[in-house]
Amino acid sequence: MTVVRVDPASPDAAVLARAASVLRRGGLVAFPTETVYGLGANALDPAAVARIFAAKGRPSYNPLIVHVADGERARALASDWPEAAERLAAAFWPGPLTLVVPKHASVPDAATAGRPNVALRVPAHPVAHALLLAADLPIAAPSANRSTEISPSTAAHVAKSLGGRVDLILDGGPTRVGIESTVVSLLESIPMLLRPGTLSIDHLRAVVGDVRVPHVEPGADEARLSPGMMDRHYAPRARLSVVDAKALREAAARDVERGLRVGAIAFDAGAIEGAESVHLPRDPAGYAAGLYAALHALDDAGVDAIYVEAVPEDAAWAGVRDRLRRAAHAG
Image (cartoon, rainbow, N blue to C red):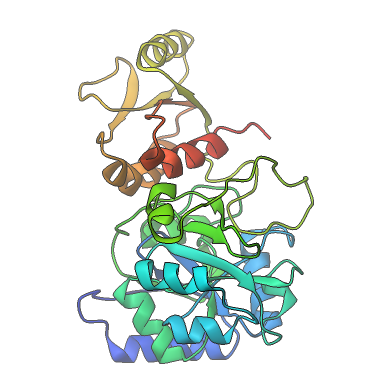
C-alpha cells in the first residue's frame, strides 16, 4: 500500500499518471471524491471490478457506482438516456448525485450485480475529475472501506480499513460532503429515490417534478438497484443506538455505571459525563460532513456503545437519517 498526498487545488500530473497506470493494468486506486473516498478500478474490466469486491468483502449482489468525467461519457455508458436524466445531470453534475439508467453492452455485469442497468456519477472533486481524465476510463468506485463498515472521509480511514488490499491511495485531504451521493433510478417513467443524500428529494422535485420513494426493501440476497441499500451499512464496531437527547444522557450514564466505555454524538456542546463526546452542528450539511469522522474517532477510542442524538425528521436530514438507521441495524 502506497499513500501519496495530492493537492486538490493543483493535482500533480505525475502522480495522476501513476494512478492512471495502476488503473489501466487492473489495479485498485483509492481517491477522494466530494462525498467519501472511493475504491477505484477500471469499470470495463471484469477482473479489475472483481478485485474491488474481494478487497471490500462486498457481496456480489451489491452493484457499484461508475464514475465518469462528464455527461457525454455518462451517456456513452447508457443504452437509454431519459429526459429526466438530462435535466438532473444539467442541474447537479458534477456533484453528489448518481443516476441509475439502462446500461450499454460495454458495461460488464460484474459492475451492476448482473442487472441490466448502471449507476453513473460525475464527481465534483478536482482530484477525482483529474484522475478520470488522466486514466481516460470509467472508474467503478464504491466507498474505500470493508463492506458494511464506516465509510472513509480521509485517506487515513482508507488505510485503516483496507491496508494492503489497495495498490495506491491518493490523499486529497478530508472530503467536503461527507456522506455518499443521492441515488435516483430513471428506469421507470417516474424517477425513484433509491438512496437519500445531501441533495434532498425537494431538490430533485424542483427539477423533474414527481419523485417516488420505494416502500419495500429488497430481499436478503436480491440484487440491489443501487449501492447503499444493504440493511446494515456505514456501521462502527460498537453497538450504535439513535435516541433523543434525554434518553442519550440516561443511557450513557447507565452504561458508564456498568463499566462500559461509551461514545456519544450530540448537538449541544458540553461533556456527557463519563462518555467520549463528539458534538456535531445542527445544520444537515455540516452534520453530514462530520458524521463519519466522528464515528471513526469513537471506534478508535475503543468504545463499547455509541449513542447518537436523533436528528430532525425533515427532508434535508434524510441522508443523515438513512446512514444512522443502517449503522444502527443489528443484522
